[in-house]
Length: 428
Ligand code: GKR
Ligand code: MG
Image (cartoon, rainbow, N blue to C red; front, side, top):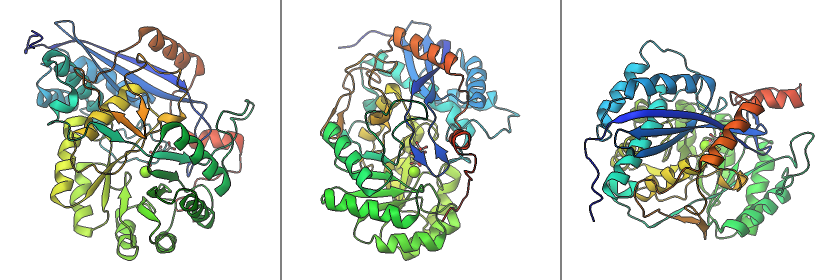
């Protein structure tokens, strides 16, 4: 069936809507998640009237760049992704700012241009899919799997944000709390791999949590990610102690040189979304043998086609692939799922923050993405396969306006709660 859409459609109008959704007090090595997470929803409308969707960070500097790029890309053909990238780069000329990456200081040197390009590229692919009747996974080279596995992404957390009623997850501040959280999450979603966000408590306590998870879930691959909180020495000690227990050790220490040192001395592969964050990082990482697994993330690798390029480069050098996540909504989850489906070497279960989101809060119509046995079926309809719900979009935008949060700041929020809190890297 040919849907009969024009192949020369051009971008006629771009709308960028910042939204906020409730988030829980999840702890990490730079602080704690604020009561709201913010995202920007991008709509690209063509001169034929099709609308493609994208989702990205909404921090102030990033929003301003998105708006500048939106003006510049009007008139671009939706199939001309090279021209789209050129125009996005042109819109950033003279912009040397580094802020606005939406990652609370955990990923700071990724490419600004790639982060700005990403939601527009995803939206163009969504349009291409609608115009051809093909799912985005087909446009990326074809789905090699029809379900994409995700992992149970565990966080140490408080029972509630200060002043609020305890949430449905309760506190998780020790090994028992982490195991209880894993049981609850795996019970609800069926995940078959587990990741623990570390860097919060002394490494001995986090090792104990991993051992407790191993006892409770003997067959689930396990990972820990302290976001670079450990020295080289600590990382090596943790890696050696968890020999045979971890499937990979994610960003134990900050910086390529340290990662390379750790990689030589620990038995398991090192994974990263902090030390290889852009194309320029690949050559030094390969030369030094610093990492074994790259966590891709289309939000800062320039969109889906550039993430496929990354996957090809990783394959060439024998690097494994997994996927990184930040607090996100359904448009991102759909894009992540199409990308993972079309990336043959992405064989690890992907990260997602999805379970931490209130299921009632999203910008898409329910039903397109439903977890079963820890995986999502790859949407088979045209494009991304998700539909914007305008009432929900309006509600989450209003929430953005009301909540007043304009930049993710896990450290600032933590300091307002505990003025003695210090940012330290390495922490142990
Ligand atoms: O949500 O606190 C968090 C995570 O720590 C996130 O911001 C990281 O970017 O999940 C991420 C990671 O794997 O490093
Ligand atoms: Mg990570």
